Image (cartoon, rainbow, N blue to C red; front, top):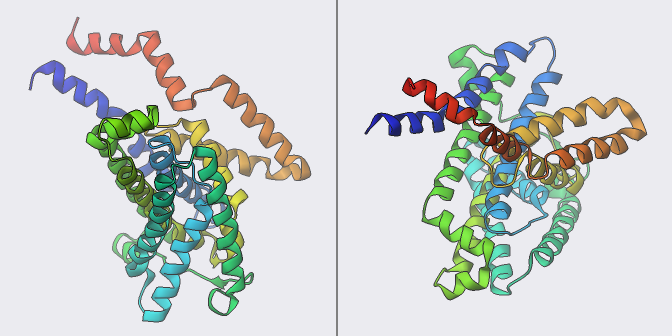
Length: 339
């Protein structure tokens, strides 16, 4: 491996190293043992960053806009919690069960949509209908789900990590979510740089041309749907853990889907760190504007409109583009090579 190649690899890894180094120092710098409010905000940022990364796979890569992410998260959460309760085991074991149930459900929806060649709009409408159906079913099955009352849930407290390291439970949960985000980011990076990424690009650009060239569009759309909804179903229980209760309204369309869509588009569609940047900004704005009362939604919408105007392609792609155009990368490369 020559010097230029090694520098190129290191340059590509530096942003990843910098981002995760920053995430690792968040608990020591910002988590306060006397209050859990700020800790919950940071944990919520990580949860929604993972949700947005999952949407990046199915929507950003294969053009399948799903509007039942809240419902999928609810399916994964209830399947995880109820299975753990029925088997009298820890939900840490049944997390994969809940994620698998959510993934299968999402894959079935994507299969029908791909077979029937639903457009983006039609799929969005169908999945939005499923979102409402799931919420009503969870409320109606009150003898099993607790209905609108719900039930308390704190069983994903990472005691094994707190006992091992001596850190607080919220800090430990944050680090667990950072590890999950790292795994999802790694999977997304691998997918986009492998043969799947080429096939996804072909589907996104011209689905009919992709079919004509032998790309198995149905298989790939179902695969993307399963991966994305598996991730959403896996993280859903952690979202319930932050609130301390499992209740249908926690997974509402406005509470999950709307925020995730804004996060992904604002951060940057098909970008690796767009979901994280978007989640940090949106959750902060949502928290900052909570004191505006009835004007909160108006102020939130105006601020987001301004951001969308100045960062039409998303914050991360826009900043990256300006960075490339400024020639900073070339000057840094020249300094490294001693020129």
